Amino acid sequence: MIEVLWHGRGGQGAFTAARLLGAAASLEEGSYALAFPSFGPERRGAPMRAFTKMDGRPIGDRSAITQADFVVYLDETLLDDGWESELKPGGLVLVNSTQPASAFGDGRIVPLDADGISSRYLGRPIPNTVFLGALCALCDRVDEQALGQAVRAGMPAKLHEGNLAIVAAAAQAVRAMDAAAAFEGDLAGPDSSAAADLVDAVGCRGVGGAAPVRPAVDSAEGRDCDCGPSAASAPARPACRIPALAAEPLPPWQTFAANTCFAAGHLTDRNAGWRNKKPVISADACTGCLQCYLYCPDGAIYKTGLSPAQARSGAATAVAVDYDFCKGCGVCVAVCSFDALAMVPERGDGPAGAHLQEPSHAMPTEGGQQ
Image 1 (tube, rainbow, N blue to C red):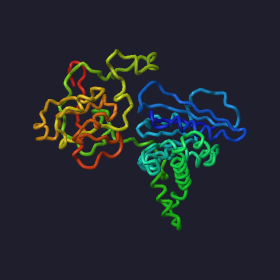
Image 2 (cartoon, one colour; image 1 turned 90 degrees about the vertical axis):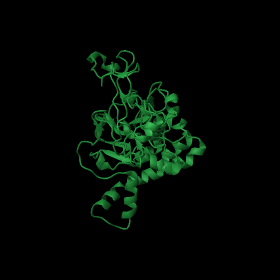
Image 3 (tube, rainbow, N blue to C red; image 1 turned 135 degrees about the vertical axis):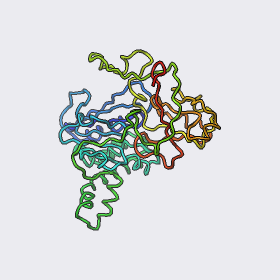
Image 4 (cartoon, one colour; image 1 turned 180 degrees about the vertical axis):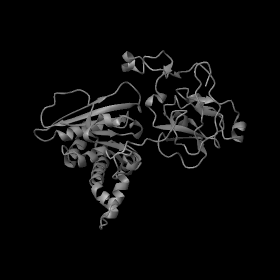
């Protein structure tokens, strides 16, 4: 049996991809597949999983996949320590990332610029069918022709052309990995430049077998440091009755419900794991109108106590973002009339220029103590 575990966020189409893969793998006589999702009532953007099982005989095991031949991450921020525990021996991890494979430090991780490839054909980043094309090249249970039939049967007609082009492009790119590796080594034939272009688009390069290298983390805040030069410190959030992070360990018998066993008003995970982009405030453009503060549905934007004039005289702003509780919904960016806020990737390079800065601040614990 070939098993594929999909990690994505609500709205990225992970279950659609799992279902289309299963449909394509079960078209031939004597082929069977099973596809199903696993998610709760969360909003779009919340982490979810989907599963595809493919076999040459009827599949009786309908349980969730714990170890897979292929583990697909539609969002790079979901790839975290311990990823190898979900991988069978000889398996591969496919991740939506623009980083080179060397940044992960493990040859089992294959990064693909799925957002870039899908944007090229659809005009927006919808990464799910990119990985269907990649799996065509890596898994003998499914081919492009079968996937084409599944796409035509399972998607609206207006989406056929773009998604079929994505499948073909991704499959071609992954099949070119060997040629690209030869290009990087000691072969330089007439097709080498094309292979190099393909491998740059997919991000697949041969690497060693060291443990994966994760992006740098600010140990004091526990957040990824990806917003360029350090910003001036924003005033700490005043002590108030809002949810606080609970860091004390749970008793062993309560770990099955880690997000619900603490007293009400406490969270156990920063931003609940929902955010893959975060709002960053421009000190130059912010007027202190407080629209972002008023419209934030989670109360994650707070007033720093500085007037707009005081804020403009320094590097701080009249408002700041509490990244412990920001879910990355983007409402603040939508309501800002002065383009003073922008959504930047949670991981990777920060925005160009130093005018967009993430304030450094610590969340007070109960009682106002840092």
